Length: 204
Image 1 (cartoon, one colour):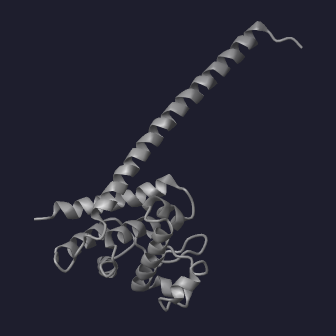
Image 2: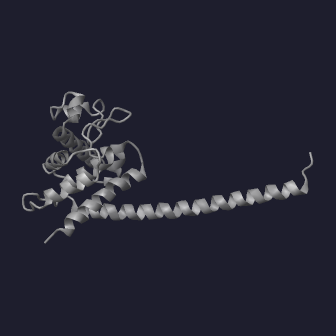
């Protein structure tokens, strides 16, 4: 079988363009990956810096800041619902992390249901966590639509995973979402940073 010189030149040119495109794409991917990893490292450092340092009793001005932030970051809830969510989060030991997580999981919608049946603010799968939920007296999947119960359950599951991963927040987020999804990590940690810096900026 013979191939004309013209067709051979075109084929070689196409191969060259394809190869160059692949190289460029690879370089862009590496650059973006390194950028993401650097951003992730910064986010983890911020998380370590701010963990467990939020005291709403000593700093009563925190609550309205959190309510405004929650309300502005969801088009699916009323201000009263935002207030209820913040009130519940402030009863936990990790309110900033919880709020950052549920922003990504459900956009603060207490009635959110995923395609796999995960429910409520923290998108909890009742059957998967049934045993742990029972310790909180959550015995019906519909209980997860309750703001207070869902937030308490979200913290319990998250802290269990944090202990399981020996304090590694990145691995903990992977465990929570059920896979290695860099974009998910970054969304949660970016929200955490955003809210933490916002609160810090209000310090007097």
